[in-house]
Length: 312
Image: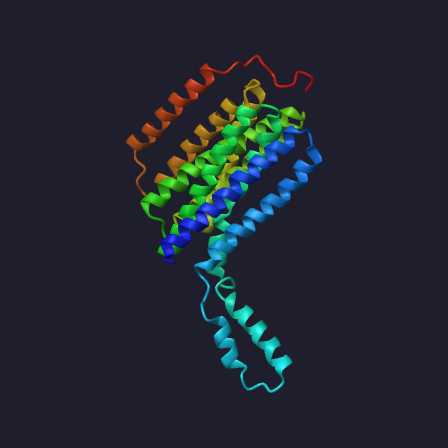
């Protein structure tokens, strides 16, 4: 089996697991089995992360670990001691790439988006209890986003380049924007649904933005102390925007999440061009005008008088 075929079959396996798991969670939730839904969500997430990590691992293992271990310990006389040392040595050799910091950094970074998308989708499924059509929309979109993320994650690892290529950047940027939308929407909805103090919303938006910026900086191979501090300023800006959104927006948390996404896309776009030294007056105003255009469109279709829970 070629490397391309292995990648295709592993992607199909992940697709079946993701889509089937989300469908099962929605079905259990709509049966009003909330406790099972919550517990199963944690186990499904653990399963998906382990599965994606193991499938990543298959393409980076150092083959022949068992054969090398047998040669290394062939002079040990006692069969039990020899077998134990061969097994342990082969296992340790098999994980040699995992123990390298550069590989661990790649894995943990590219598992950020799947985690954000999965838990935001679970939250939106819960918030739309009994609304089958809306649940199915998020199941399909999130499944597609997770599969695209997995596919191009494999491409990043296989090409083994410091900075990602344009096709990978475009695909992962699209996934990142979707992740930002579902994260911001679910944070707003949960805050209003349960009448939580606004500080939890600001903290959530700040944390989500920090993770998204970190993931994007890693893609561009620009993880530095200065860029990380700049990323925190971007996250702080989004926290301030969420303060305004929480105070003035109505019950439609989808348009509110989309508005936060538009703001995030603007500030990240400006910072991204600044990092690449391509930021100019023309580029800034293009980004700004597009942000204003989409922002006005979202504001024009939003009912600012409606509240999700009047008792709050």
